Image (cartoon, rainbow, N blue to C red; front, side, top):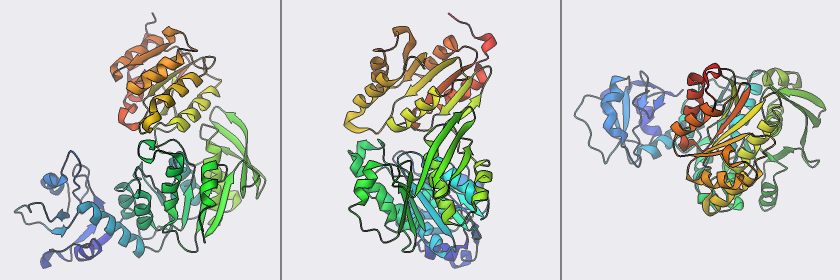
Length: 468
């Protein structure tokens, strides 16, 4: 993590007003959360739509903050404490991260895409760690706040960092690229995410491609060569850096092929530039793309082919993404962090291939941010769900009512349940779960369906389930 004197922090954040007696105080890390800040960290109070973290300075100090950035428009507390005045604390945080990155002797892989970036990040970190001191974005800190915090968490002796980069509006990826300044830039795919803002897939691609704005001039650009939108948009760009692409198509530099889907993962083969089989302990056929892209980048950094399987066997997977959890007599396929049409279809395909379960249930919440066609997209998914594979559909949220209604074209009325609250979801599940069932739980983040996952684990024991 960043370890600098307050004088250095003042310069790097383009601040002013630090009293001379505080200049040599050393900060060890940065936090924007007064509740979880640690001893000797710098507090950066942000201002959101419904909060102003400047109000929590006393709590931050109690929990160990040693200094604070401070918006010059906010009243400075009458306390003996180091404050660095800045125009805007968020902009100062981003500037601090950018300057810290420029001071580091490190290689950075920036990964973006509509789907798969977190899994690819996790796989790549495992592969690179077989040879280098490697860090990755923790959790899902991938936006205009999370990326600066991820950069500031890097140790000075880290050799390679894998940074996840998300975007929800035009211009955000260009900002993140200027902070990260990647040596390798990677786009996993273009999908139906954030269409509320971007409107079209072409606009999504244009925004994602801004990841190469600050790519090292001698760096590498990697993308899914099977993606039709990316292929078309890249034709219009003059990219001077090296370019490599991966996928199942024969025109790719790294070509992969699925061999088989198993209960605990999948077998796949690299057909080119080498021919070798691997086992990936992740669920879902789509993960062969994530693994192949990660292998490509790992090989670029000189990871020996004999290290690859060891790395794949030691993936530290970010939670709530295609995570199979064993509960009390049944299982949960926890994919509760986000949802969009592409990722939902992939999750359903994963569920269909789980032949070891005698009952399959889906709990689906709204897919948010899809724009003007959001109802149509929910209806399409509803009609596509296979009644020969899925016994019950439970939905939550207003948009998912459309999914439920459309699914009744193929499902019995009694096997489709629309709910308005998590409590209704739980009560419905308790009535229908049978031994050896598997339950897919998936929705956009706002629905916090991880709470359903937790409650299922704690509250449902099938020996006590009362069937109607």
